[in-house]
Image (cartoon, rainbow, N blue to C red; front, top):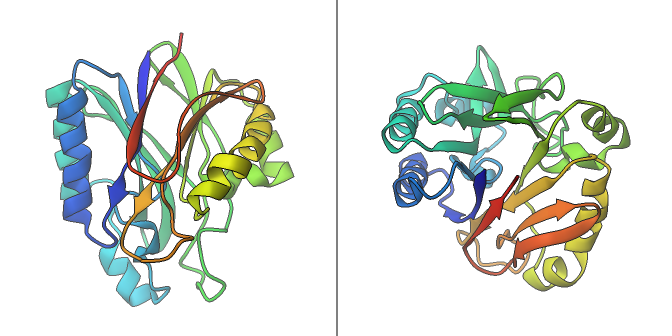
Amino acid sequence: MKINLMSLAFKTKDLEHNKNIIIKSMREYAQKSDLLVFGESFLHGFEALSWDYEKDKAIAIDINDDIINEIKIAAKKNSIAVSFGMIEKYDDALYSSQITIGKTGEIMDVFRRVSDGWKEPIAGAHYKEGDGFHAFDFGDKKILIGICGDFWHDELIQKAADIEKDLVLWPVYTDFEPRVWNEEEKFEYAVQAERLKSPVLYVNSVCYDFDEAYISKGGACYFDGGKIIKEVPSGAEAVLVVEIN
């Protein structure tokens, strides 16, 4: 199974642009990959929310939105699966979710972040977390997803570790300066990933919207056994191709 970790740049609040990046990538890697994985909140951009619910509910989308349907059509047309982060609207609640669409255009999985680090302290009760981890089937693999800080809480990572699975996807948005990630933090993440008791595929997005050193600059890793098996460094857009047997 070939999985591409898409450490690419989004534009904050520009769903049309970000959707087009996803669909363009699906066309480019059709017949070359089984699954493309984008980072946390890639469709919206991590800094898209204002924490003013009336404004934020207008940009959040549900899983039946036309944008999602376009990506589903592209998945079926190109026979390629895709997983990406978004701000999901469900009833009157907003979630940081990762949606995974299969090769025939069906929604295989929706995972809602279970840790609260995605939101500011001023966020009201409408900004919610999911109710736990689960695994879903993709081909002959059972896949579990956790978003960013979900695996940095002892109680949560233990719950994820206890679930039967073959592979973990770890989409994130992390603001490490590239040198700090490349020389220090990636090793801490490798050790943490080992606690999940399966191979872990980590992918971070790139953000060029803010001219600051500590703004996400990408990076992707294949972790297994506490080690980095394969990686692309932080600092620029890149795609990491991983083969899982």
